[in-house]
Image (cartoon, rainbow, N blue to C red; front, side, top):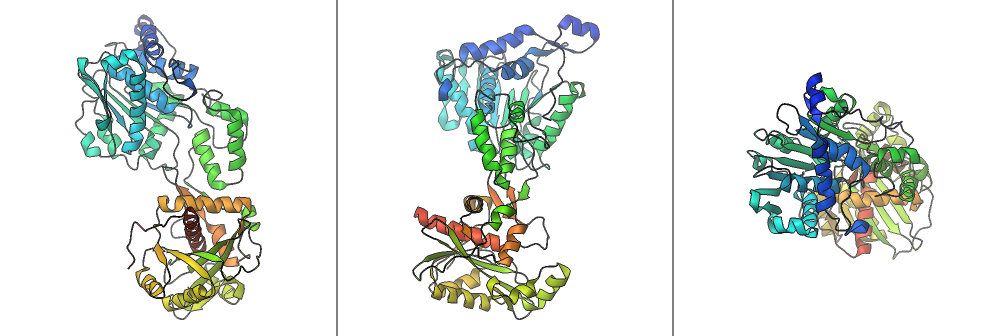
Length: 540
């Protein structure tokens, strides 16, 4: 079942709170004041709501704005909440709501010389809320008279009160020593470490009612400041008395919920039916059902479920549909290749792809393994390397000794290029310099391929699409099948994916899939008419 309703304090007057010794009370006037600010001074500037007043949705009004601005401390009548955490699926209007709150804190919170900051891991991410505040200001005659927008410095200044809103990002040393009235941290799940959060955490200690408000979608890495805040927020969510000064609002499906159910979609998305449509959800579900990485993304971004960060990459049923044979293309058929030189003592892989006239990708594979290590893999790891080497259809070659002889690799690749029209070979730059020089001396175009998320993302997704659509032809190569079965996919905070082994140190190999992805990248780049220079290494 989706998360149960959040437990909240009963809204009580100051007199009743003092009588019962609660320490906090709800001020209806302050809550109405905050809600009224949105209605009176803020206007949407884009999309289908452009030109309309910023009227808060029910959940935004009742569960966020009224709660944050209506609750006060009995001892000084200042704002009760000092730290807040909001976690929602994407497309529920998180950044838009945050921009409205930021504008209120800057210009209408009664704080002289208010220092307000928009914060995120990257300056670009932090600029999203800034740009939305700037648009709110430009769309309001009242705010335009009072606020000055300086885009070049990502600053919005309120000269009469000496207040400002500025953007800061991952340079945590620059965030220390700030006298913060409001800190809005957007997409906390993307934080690579906790340095920036820790640097700003107590920046408002000298202010009477400072507010550090994080707003985010679920992440995947549980060893992060975001998951730490998530766990803290969940505890406050079920027991507000655990920390009465911490504001918590989390909407999500439970990990074991039926993610295909419209009831689950609605329960996890408070803006369902307003900022998102059921038919769009249904389309996303149909897509997620065919792809493990897309399912992981759907759970995170659409249902706000914390995922593991690694999932099985290739659906076995989809892959089985791609293991068929294919007729040999003509001699002028263009091939794109990937070469993964994993370790000299283990498997090394070369994969070539050709896109035929039916938009299918035909795959040829070649593998090398040191002969003296093959028996150990057979017995210790249960990987039939010796048997594969006896089957010509696998393309497995055992090289003499206990390390792979690169002369064998060079010889076989040169012969492949003589027999085929090879356009380009993508290679992992690590430990490949000598072999690359040898291949280039033979007139073969070899280009280094970065091994990070940004390099692998698009071609990994392309491979996933090809297997889902059954447009890959692998000739049922058992070595490549083995590597495909081992491959997991990892997603970073930006939503980029790359293929990884199931766990560090695992004996399971994925070298053929890595080489296949690099080959697909070369084919896609050629079709797009662009070269792909390597940002990490210059191959001479």
